[in-house]
Structures are given as structure tokens and as C-alpha cells.
Image 1 (tube, rainbow, N blue to C red):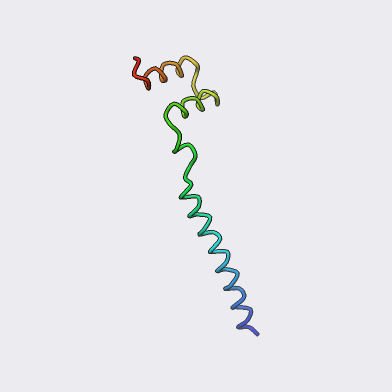
Image 2: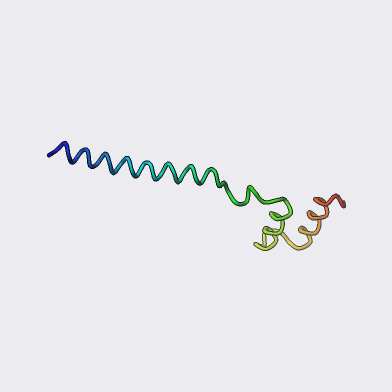
Length: 68
């Protein structure tokens, strides 16, 4: 009887571990969304979040486009 409980516990731990492993693999394959964005898209998002001013946005956008 004690063996069955231990086996059942091990089965649950196995399945939980498998789900966590698959989740980590999926997260790694998919990657972070911002790491796939272009520099211009990141710049637009920073402006939208208020991290940079419109003037900073224009300066950095011009720099990216090669217009200093």
C-alpha cells in the first residue's frame, strides 16, 4: 500500500515536471516579444509608454534612418 502511494506521488511529480519543461521550452522558442522588434518599433513603443519625449523620438528616428 505504501508503495502505491509513493508510485502515485512520483507519477504526479513526473507529469508536473513534464508540463514545466514543455512550458520552458515553448517560452524559449517563442522568445521575448521585444527581442523580435526592429529598432524603429522599439522606439515607437518607448514613445507610446512615455519613456522618451517626442523630441527624443524624432532625434533617434533620424539617427536610425541615417539623417543626423
